[in-house]
Length: 247
Image 1: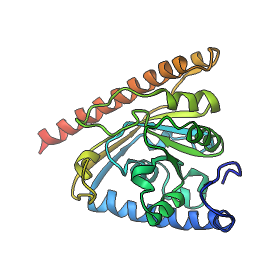
Image 2: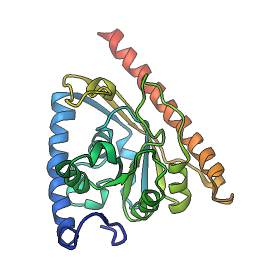
Image 3: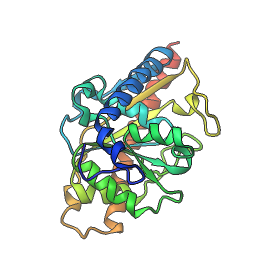
Image 4: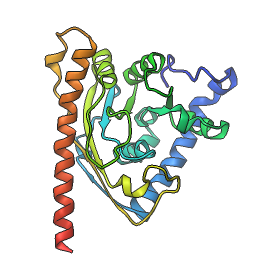
């Protein structure tokens, strides 16, 4: 665990035990995730072989459901994350969804969530994301909200500011099928669905590093990444149509 990343709302005993409880809980949940995504549902993963295994890696994904971060984390690094805990991604998590009661909040902390206040203009959370990303892996959803129609929407500059602040290896991730697994407004995931996860090649964003670290630069960087995610998403849609035609 990065010594700089703390759950400020927790006490000393929690932080003393956190590296151990977090490893235990995340790997139990990840094992259940494998059962859910790969047994009760059919999940097709593309591009996993080109994922880096180094710290300071940022997975930028489109957003379809409340449990997308579980899918991306499991598909990317499980079971390797069992013996390399730093590969378990940090995740920003909306307080109104993941911290609305003490039990859910405790589990969210164990899953390496960084709480983000409603409205998403949370500078404290942004600084925590930057510190966490430097020492491990992080999953971010640049759109900032779940899609309503399945399309990949525009990204927000926050993810770009994390990139400019940490210079990570950036991997574009496209997912599809999670809207059918957990539609907006529902809380019980569905089964027997087909899910796709596509990990792209590392993004070359070197042209932005000599520019001012501003909101405008961050937005342009994110726009480029979102375009790559859309290309991967379109490829997933093509593969899905081919499978449907093949029966």
